[in-house]
Length: 178
Image (cartoon, rainbow, N blue to C red):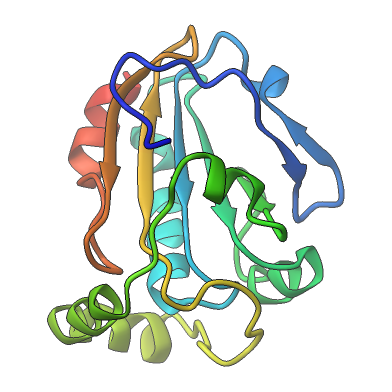
């Protein structure tokens, strides 16, 4: 089922890249951004995580960020080594939550995102050093999903991306976080 505004996210339990098990109880009573990404070394995905981490000081106190990839934990650990661990980066190897929340796949979305996002792609690879071939595990054709949940776990905003670069704008996330 696709997530809608007003839905409650009540269950999410996956392995984190730091070796711990993430559970929603860790963020209970806090606002959060939950994002579904593509494969383990997707440069678009890691650039977005980098931008999120770089905006951490602009977020409201106690705001949490959860990034979920459809890949093995080992592969995600390799490709996420450039990120400090102030956010949760989780592996959903068996697509449990990707399928539960109807995270889509689209070859056309990958193509269109790659064309219109060519400068983001170049920045991710050549400036930030995110190698798209470092660890190829997961859904190459996956489309992103961003979910903003309030302190009660209720969805206040959701965006099912149509392309690989289609996310809730960072300024809206910052505004929501406060």
